Image 1 (cartoon, rainbow, N blue to C red):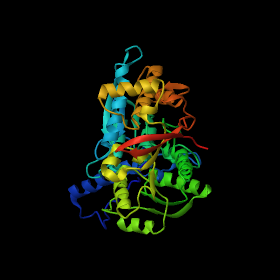
Image 2 (image 1 turned 90 degrees about the horizontal axis):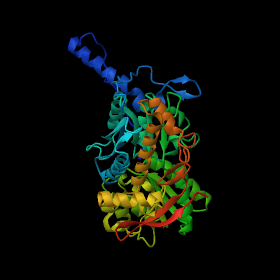
Image 3 (image 1 turned 120 degrees about the vertical axis):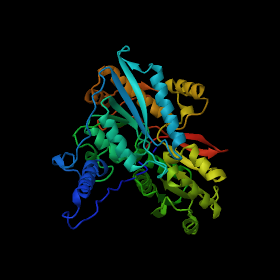
Image 4 (image 1 turned 90 degrees about the vertical axis):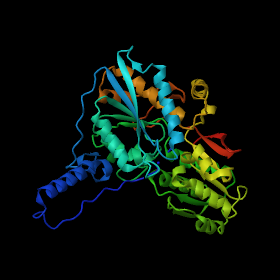
Length: 452
């Protein structure tokens, strides 16, 4: 799914004052308290501003940052938590991820090491009603909460890469591993694939603690460009939601399109809170494109873009619409209605019903257990949970660092996604992706796609 910055965060600036002489005791206490909060959150919300402990390698914590106190954990109990958007239109997708995690835990009766270790699971909501999607302040709060709970040894999340950008550095300093079923922004793990200081800026302790069971966007963006070429696209207009995931994958798509000889008619970032995009769609229509490519998520108003595109006369036959895995959910179809018909998406893997072997068995068990079709990332959440459980079984004690190391060392894992390994960056060795289209009000698999 999907950094929406799958977005960046903003740090609060304390109010300026000319003097503290007339504040009084109560006022002075308030000022000191506010300053303490800003200091506490500095490294969480602005990892780029951290000070290197070893110049040229990885950043350290901000000088004024104070890590939360850690409550002692039960040596015979460990906790896995998920950080997912359980509020807003991403809930449908997120709930199936939670279902997948719960499935994995149920298979082991929430125990490890021959029953000696009890595994608890807790759901953290990284979204708020006010934002309608993941919220930077909520992510920071959740990350500190996880660190402070001595039972927490692994995190499964996030759905949005921008949220992971904030939580990884906090968890990194506490040796807590994060296994992502959906974060695909390359800069989280891969040198030279994002901003200049990435990915080291996210690992202030100097060790890697983030891994993902889904291929990154440097692969998916290129696959999308190649698929567009095979669909006879000659001219494209590119939009993005100006967030980390959306902009990043649109960058890769644009570079690939140009390399393949597809004419890029224009590129711009949208205001995701706009009530409509009719003026923009009329401008694009006048350029006569074959395709509009959108780098973003359903929560970035993709449904409204599609509706306005069709309302100004860009029919599915004349102008295709394509987006990444961030739009491949039921919420997109609900938002766009009948205009969703014919929308294309790429996905960083195969849809659940196309999995084979152990994946096919998992798919049938999911449907039997929940009486519903799993959304795209449910299998990846299940796989992430199985990796975490496997690491706990190897360590057999409440030891964050050892469990992190066991996860990062995962090799030849035989799971529902196939047999795969993590590389030294924490990226999966899997590269098979898929092309999908909305047909008769449902997402349908079109064909497997592979990087060239």
